[in-house]
Amino acid sequence: MKYSKTNKADILTDKGYRKCQFKIVKKSTFIRLCFSFFCILVLSVTVLTGCSRKEPSADVIAMRELFAQNKYIIHACGMISDSDGIQYDYTNSKEALENSYNKGNRIIEIDFHYTNDNVLVCGHAWGDLYLDGKQMTPGEAPSFSDFLKCKVQDKFTVMTFDDVAAFMTQHEDMIVVTDTKETDIETYKMIASKYPNLINRFVVQIYHANEYDDINKVGFPYIIYTLYETEDSERTKSALLKASKKPLIGFTFHTELADSREFMEIIKETDTPLFVHTVNKDTEIEKYLSDGISAVYTDRYDLIN
Image (cartoon, rainbow, N blue to C red; front, top):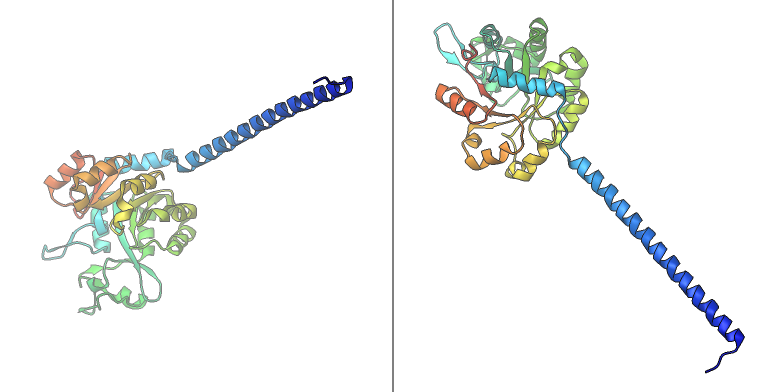
């Protein structure tokens, strides 16, 4: 077939247009691919940054080292003897606190709970209290006024949170590990507001990993994650590794878990200090400290020297 000049021109123009259009499509596709790659890259960096381990500050590292150097966290203020030489644990009493401190211990764990009129006091169980020689009803919180009249095990002096704060003010080298049984953020807001100068000398125990941020935002930099209230799902490898991305002072757990080879293999992968509770026998203390445990909770006050 023969074409006229006009037809040839039309054909050339059409070919040029299609060639140009093809180049535009290629360029547009390339731009879209680049943009998609950029978005994926940004998303990946964001995800990795959000999931990455937050490096501990110099202060957190120093506190970790202090725990490792001391080796012993005195549990519930430590054991205390009465006038007959009978020893009591879990008293959280003034006599026990003073005795443990005077024996050279500087890291002391204390139990706290609220009276029925919402005053924070020291204690492990209401049934440990006696008023005028009569045991208080187990599980039933007394009023603050009644609490002040009580004796622990009918022998030892009760303490309020304010008493502990006063003792810490007088003894500037003492660290208190809190055990409030549950993480009530209002409790820690109160402490931070009333005793801002003591914030850095409280090491707060949390009971679930998701409680870390709330406590840290209130102003407490030193946090231990205790596992005694956790579910099995919170002690899986993935859950513990995720929790360890926060700059914890350490994980603490019962001896039953410390005796589990499978659990210890997992928890050691967190690269976080490990504490175990509660251990009183010399042989067991030595075994745990030689097996990668940084410090033990103990009722004994006589180990520091």
